[in-house]
Structure formats: structure tokens, C-alpha cells
Length: 149
Image 1 (cartoon, rainbow, N blue to C red):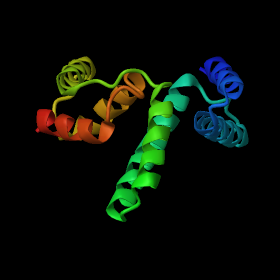
Image 2 (cartoon, helix red, strand yellow; image 1 turned 135 degrees about the horizontal axis):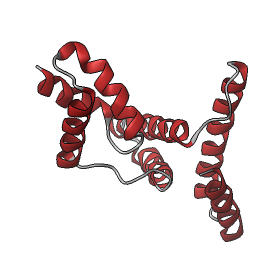
Image 3 (cartoon, rainbow, N blue to C red; image 1 turned 90 degrees about the vertical axis):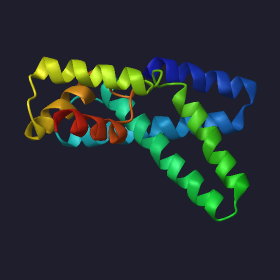
């Protein structure tokens, strides 16, 4: 993933695509921050799964910002945030739709042997491990809760 990011940075520089280049550099900075934090905790550099989680967090932050800008009547800033979201999503796997998410949750519930709501943490941890960056875990938690109740 890091190699692809570097190649995209070079391509954006050559093409003179300043907005894309800016977003790619934001991604690189966030990854570097995570690497530094991991080094301080005695861990290795950020794995691809950690990078996917980081990208998902960046998308969520920008969606919230875009909504706030729209509510405040700043459509041009909201458009900038949405453009950044599109660039970040280029590095993420395809998001699962509702049916795929529910099927994945049912499979993980069966795999973990979860029987009740007390096993929700175990199911969510397994989902994050298997489907990082592929599903919205905020929405997935509601589905897990409904299935385990």
C-alpha cells in the first residue's frame, strides 16, 4: 500500500494535480504519525490493516466536516472535503453493501460461536480483523446487536 501511495504521489506531481497531491500528502503524514506512535509503543511500522483503519477514520472525519460545512452554508469547502474523500477511498477496498455486511456478520457469529449480547465484543473484534476498511462498523454494530439479541 505504501508503494502504491508513493507512485500516486509521483504521478500527481507530474500531472500537476495539486488537490490530489495535497490529499496524498495528508495520507502519508497520517501514516508517518502512526508509525512514530507505534515505534514509541515498541511495535513495528503500521500494517496495511492499520493503514486501512486510519483511512476509514480520515473518511469519517471528512464526511463530518463536509456535513458541517453544508449546514453552515459553505458549499465550496464541503466540495473540497468530498474531493478528499474520493482520493482517500481510492486506497480502500470496495465497501460492502447491506446484504454483504449482514452475510459477513452471520458468518462471523457462526465462526466465533457467539450466543448472546455478551459476545458482541468478540464478534466486532473478528469483524474488524477480517473486514477492515470494507464495512462501516458503526452500522455493523447495530446489526450484530440485533442478531445476538
